Length: 310
Length: 283
Image (cartoon, rainbow over all chains, first blue to last red; front, top):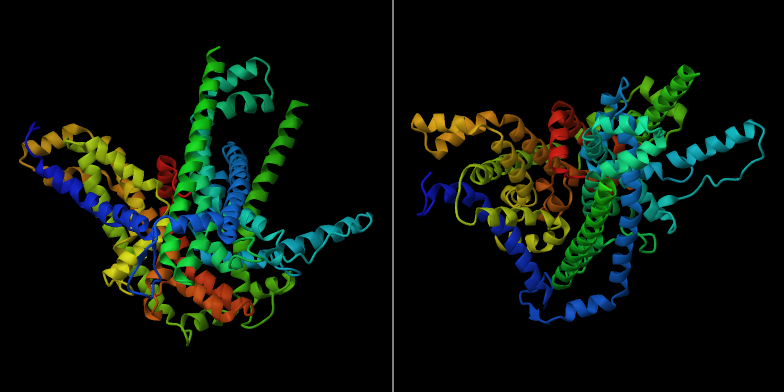
């Protein structure tokens, strides 16, 4: 290979994607930064420079703070639940049993499906009266009575998507359903990387199944868990389509998450400057979450390694 | 004793596996069964669902596909054109950049690669406002160009990373042999790297296909005329037009939007698993 001088082939091969990313990644980020310091209504021609006023207004805006709170609540509920379920599914599916490969495919289906279509189906799941969950509750209740118990009086007409206490948890539950397949596949890959000899050694030492899971599987799975944690968190901050189709931010703004709030700000109120400032806040939120998790996880990994070495 | 415990464990595992499958499939099966009920009929009971499957009303499908107020076929063509465009653009960008990062040495290569990876951290939701402003300024709203070109900005880094990793596993001896035969870098890329990297290219293409076909936010913003809507946006228009009343028709529309993408997924599923394992996207 030629050393020194200008590498024209490199320019040709790397240039295409570089120019593309400058045009559609770097420049939009700069444009968003520029707009966030301006007051600009999409319908008008000129933008007025307002300095940090947009950001200052956001810090005091109860509706925006509500949206940030909703996003954080969603992440805090959806990420651990989704990961626990995915890990459980991965442990089950990696058993040497017939039918598990078909099941892996099935569990992956929601993740590659149209979100609008899935949201429409899940509106039925959450309907009062004839919705899936209320029907199941009614069935359980009838079964309990038929077995001779006294009527437990469970509600069978909860309108999940219109009940302020239930709407956000309903979206959380749906998101675990959608994300189950990909998260599970990553955990399966992590599980298959654990040497069987470790399990055998632990079994020889008299460890039961639960003890082996706690002391071998979980620590060995730490890097994988960290990976799923970060990707899930980023995905959960992006929640938009389900809110758009199923709740429109309601009831009483309990599902008005940041991404949806930005959408309303930009395309219903046409306040592009304010929406750009909100976009930057979302970007910083995701970055901060990723950094915090990274630091925590690095410490955990180091502790585990030290424990192993000792 | 030990044998019996083993059997009990096996039965419990199978029960849990079945529950998982049912958890995933129930909403999807309900969608398919409801689409076969007579148009305009109320939310079906379980017995009516079974009846719907035994005596299916396929005319819902004919009705939705030739829906008088919405050009459903036009939506499907739009989705196909946009998806094909994005897949091709994505492959062109990622394969050339992947080659540069895997096979060429040039000043600033590692810094450039790190910059590529950094773009993966940018949340799409935060980019969509400025992207809209730029596309509007370029005059690309309501055009295929506007729907296709700004799309892969998120997944270019993902695809480049995946292809670079794969290209690096192709033996250098193959390059050298081709170069002795008089191939330039372009020749090596075309005749050695690309033919050996078909599975990795298929993985990148498969992800680009699914992401584009099922994306909602960008086509919702970049199009305002009905004739430029994609299937995914068209479905939400349909849902709004019908409120939550006509469940059989709504579910028929949902099935029509889901079927192409599910067929594609089943045909290409091994590439998806490979891509998820290599990069962990869309978790």
